[in-house]
Image (cartoon, rainbow, N blue to C red; front, side, top):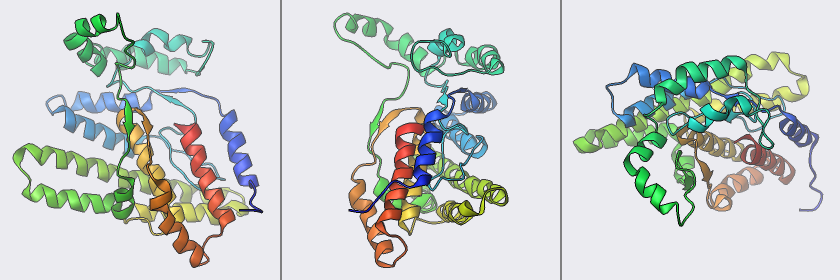
Length: 313
């Protein structure tokens, strides 16, 4: 791979992301709380599906003009997300001190502190996953904690490897069709699972289209040197809302959308893309043989994806 280099686009994105101020974001917490309040009589799986769908449809989004891979859980590229369903007692105790603690400092808007303490936290106090675990297994956990360290009792762990290959083969629309077919013949006990799956995947399609629409609105206001690539990114997002990816660029974008949505679903960490070399290689080889990309552009795309993985979430 001699002759490959880091482009100015990549250098600019790196500088922007490293220097971006970090804020606490309560936006998804606000949406989750509202949806739960409006649907108290529904099951937890249905409330979770509806709240994730609402977040995908409503969260404020943003795009940098240099980006080739778009998508994030917040408009700010390095914001810290409050996820109340799993647990937020420590946030309640520390939110005012987050800008001043020795490490991992986050700025917090005064209005967000007030809303979190007066609206969001009171609703979840005693009802989050953290509280349920403490109520049901508190004594056992305390006993075990005398001899072993028990960490992260207030949120999902992640540490999973989703079927990224299937996601790329079908896309959310293909998965919706598959779930709809299952829904026709499934048992009563599985009906809600497929209903929730369809809701979330519909939200995923909307999320992708929103990035297309956002970029189309910003296009007239960016320098001409970025318009062609931004148009391609917008087209990719629209295509992915309708079908599975066909190009290497679309495959990378689709993969990133999957992981943004996974993080939004559970606020967990350590999601693995698996054998990315195996399932992305056919897209790369097809485009290279067709003269659509060369190794320099493929590297630039991969570096843009790498920024997302290492900095944004």
